[in-house]
Length: 434
Image 1 (cartoon, rainbow, N blue to C red):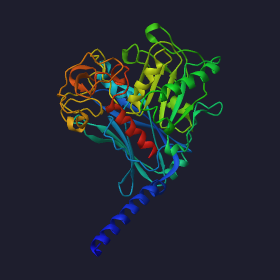
Image 2 (image 1 turned 90 degrees about the horizontal axis):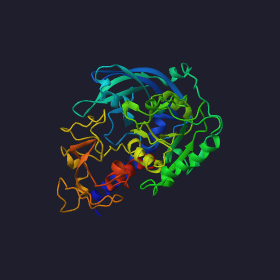
Image 3 (image 1 turned 90 degrees about the vertical axis):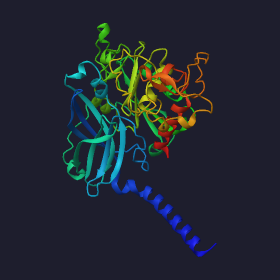
């Protein structure tokens, strides 16, 4: 080996070592092992929107990764970015969606102004940072929407907010596999459980933990999850259902008939939801609704929700596909009020649907040789099988112009997750454990 080559190898080795060292110390240089919870309101309609800052709160634990701080996925209509105030360097980022984004596409959202509670959690900074709220524009790119400086030293003297809810006892460890920094921490919040439902709530916690980890790829990655239950109850049993004239004073104010869809079960009360979680290590949230009526819903990096319907073992994985994987619905339902969220002249940000505008960025490389694009429907594929990977028309609520990877999938009709969806879910799991 000549000296020049040996020197090159040494330089490469030192660069790799330096890079690894930088990754290891980066969190400790800029952040403390604590969480900055930011509560705010997003106010507006389809024409305009603004952020109204509400409150900051310090939680004495950061549950997320301390090495993978920047979001590698271009997903979600919004993104939170923490920047170093002195250098402008991005220190932390995550994409997410909101209920407000769906409200914009409803008939009421065209011009009626509404206010939505939202909560983001980021690592607690050691020095002054810029908190930046990004918004995806009509051209599909992210733009600065709102920003402000946050000085943790000044904030510590101003944090006066007290949580309205208190954990009545230690959280239930449904599954604990180790250090929260190296695991996907999922918190299950019980909704619609009254004073006499404590034993049922514990049984249902274990059922929902089984539903969470029962389907692939969750099942193969079960050792990468910590799962917690919040032992809190409301004043009444059951879930509000305006279509049936039912109103329940439940823990986090959930309700069927969200945006006029009977089965769409969600809560608008994000502050109460995060109050209920408190200091429990939390990367993702499941709301477990004490109701036998079919229903659920989810928002990317927001929360997932399912009722205790007999189909919950399938409803919950589907909703987790949204909330954890950022996956799109693959079924067709053009009556949905928020069904216009996918512009057909742009490539969707969700990894499991395409308009063929930029199909090379999706699952094109996974298609077997000889499969035509678009791919003809094959009705002979059994309902519980994906069938061959292809480009099948009918997805994202639309029968035409939007395509999916498989004949059947969890995101379409409760079949197993297809290889495209499984790939993204595994990539997201890695974001928390590697």
